[in-house]
Amino acid sequence: MSNDFTLRYGSWAMVAGASEGLGAAFAEALAKRGLNLILLARRMEKLEDLASSLKVKYNIEIRFFSVDLHDFNQTKTLVSSLDVSIGLLVYNAAYAPIAYFSDINESQLTQIVDVNVKTPLLLVKLVSEEMIRSGKGGILLMSSLTGTQGSPKVATYAATKAFNAILAEGIWKELKPKGIDVIASCAGAIMTPGYANAQNGKAPGTLSPEKVAEISLKALGRGPIVIPGTINKLAHFFMGRLLSRKTAINIMELNTKNLS
Ligand SMILES: NC(=O)c1ccc[n+]([C@@H]2O[C@H](COP(=O)([O-])OP(=O)(O)OC[C@H]3O[C@@H](n4cnc5c(N)ncnc54)[C@H](OP(=O)(O)O)[C@@H]3O)[C@@H](O)[C@H]2O)c1
Image 1 (cartoon, rainbow, N blue to C red):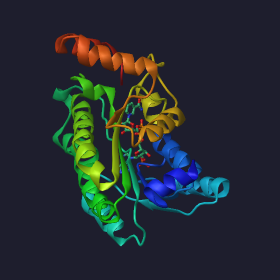
Image 2: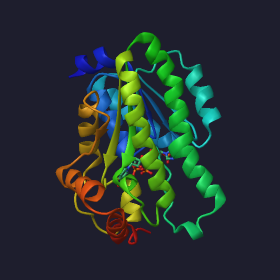
Image 3: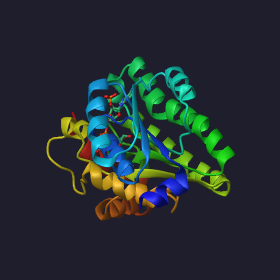
């Protein structure tokens, strides 16, 4: 397994939003495949703990940096200063405040768009330039089933997740002939610390971060979209293909109205 990934993507992967939950699970799944890691998030202590444990377990090189992905210039300066080529990018970070649109302020809206749209878009542009030159690379963007239809109480977040999925589909086609695999992972509920804070109980089809990371990485190279989990695949089919938009939004609201 390790040979396959390093051959396809080179020896360095970057996980943006790696300090806990799904990002940490991606970091471990990539470490297991023998890739060296560049880990980004705001909380340095969490990154440090994760890096120490993965270094010991997998004998790989890890660099970690505290960066606020809300600020693309900070991210760009950091990425441009690296002396290694990023062969695989996993953009996992997201900002998802839970509130009705009337209660959300301009600064929060700007931050949602910066963390979930602007930075992944410009980071993909930045790292794909070197991937195109070297004729190989991988890009994985985290999307969500909330992005399949309008999702009350997380409306802007959901719209940004739709952006990531549609972006991945377009550049999957464009970059494939250049040797670059692109995928968006449209996950249902994942038992991350962020999800556990927002939800009482477990939605149907909830998966562990480890499972989502593993399924998503295995699907890289196989198509533009992966939906981890059978229940989530079925939900996506019903919500996206069979039901009217109105019904799909109403069903989504039954779940999202309980978020807090
Ligand atoms: N959890 C779910 O049920 C679910 C379902 C579908 C899709 N997803 C997607 O899966 C991904 C991960 O979800 P999650 O629940 O694990 O999220 P999370 O618990 O909020 O964690 C996200 C990671 O991103 C980092 N991060 C967030 N904002 C950042 C910023 N401004 N700058 C740098 N790092 C930042 C966090 O680290 P720091 O706080 O240390 O910066 C953390 O490591 C997201 O893209 C989300 O949309 C999640």
